[in-house]
Length: 167
Image 1 (cartoon, rainbow, N blue to C red):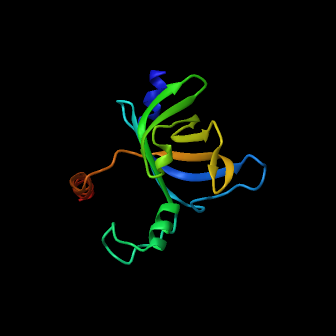
Image 2 (image 1 turned 180 degrees about the vertical axis):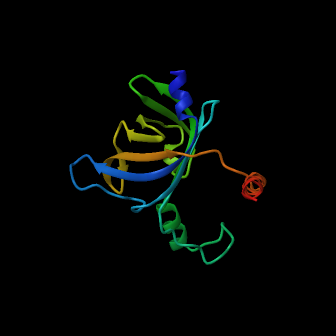
Image 3 (image 1 turned 60 degrees about the vertical axis):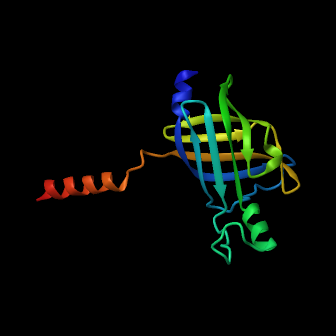
């Protein structure tokens, strides 16, 4: 299990988020065809996930706490996030103990996902169906492992090194 945990540890960029209704109707893309998202697993057993719709409207005000009811509704309905602890179970299942969530009903819940890897691609699928827009669905997400983020100083050093080696 430790080697599987090592494969999960790090940050992941969302490639796709699809919901499959259990009633067999067509697949849904609740955050659009190209949502933004990041998933992070830390070595000490914490995780965090953020998923944003591809075309989120901005607020009229630059104050994040001031917005119309319509702005707040559009913002919340095009974003989901939660964080908490995780552990790896048998049968390639990762279990989340949710400590905080944009959707307050998830706080204190346990959610499980099956997972599989294909190179630097991670596939997650919900074990139990969940409600989404009034329908029971299974969520399917595809993630790509992020490389180490470079600081501005590291980018500058790399550019300088490349220029020196070319000159």
